[in-house]
Length: 391
Image (cartoon, rainbow, N blue to C red; front, side):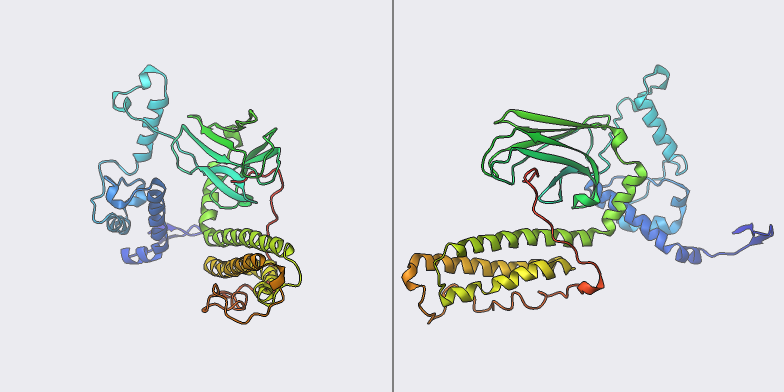
């Protein structure tokens, strides 16, 4: 290696290949990660690859070539295309295909078809901030996809369709493309109306979103031009950020799902309890004693969890207690009010002898939550308003 120092003095440095490979090891590893991601996006395995074409002068580095051959199980790397000319050749092929002038046409490219793809996944917001993907990233265009949704409130007359693009599971981390309100839908119980949402991307990359409700014969459309989409640099950054935060995003989604499940279970149990005559039997009191602690855990401890497995385990345990309490309520209701004051003299047939009601709420379910004093507590998601779109 030779060069010029800041003072204008020339220098020469001897560097062995082994030392160069040692210094560049991290960069080589990043190159392999890019190759693996490209195969994952294309849904192919190394065995399904026919040729590996190397592009760029750095592809001549022996260490990189060895790593590629190992990844592709000894497959011979293609050397028929000059690495410094490969990109220029591809650009020339594309220019010939899209050109309309006769002199730019070539028999060699007459049957070649180059297809654009969707750079980021596209979808709508559902369930209090979740991103429901309708067209996935790297889908070839033109493309059209349809999905059905419904209402989240009784007698709901309108829904808001919010359109996003991105790779993270929560819409607040993705790029909003637009929104519109479909009003005049049929008044019915929640979940009954069928709202059909269609995403269509044409060959020019223009996105058209249509929402309709057939029974009420209402329809709305939103068109997103390419000028409203993210730049190539912003797209790449979003993909990298999604990869870096994938674990945290999974925990956030798990906490949101647990919150919805437990809130629904607690509400059902409290509604059933309110319909029971007083005083409650000792057995029933014992089976619903966890409710107060369960609601406190939901509000105060669940937002601090850092592992999806721990969230799932604890949520499952609490839901078992909810189901056990509901079964006891059903039996008590069938017995009638005359048995409400009877003492509990035997074991419950539905009791799980290996599970203690207190254990489901004590501890952290296999993981130590973050200390709430170490940072800001994650706020619990609020229910969607009556304009929200939900599955």
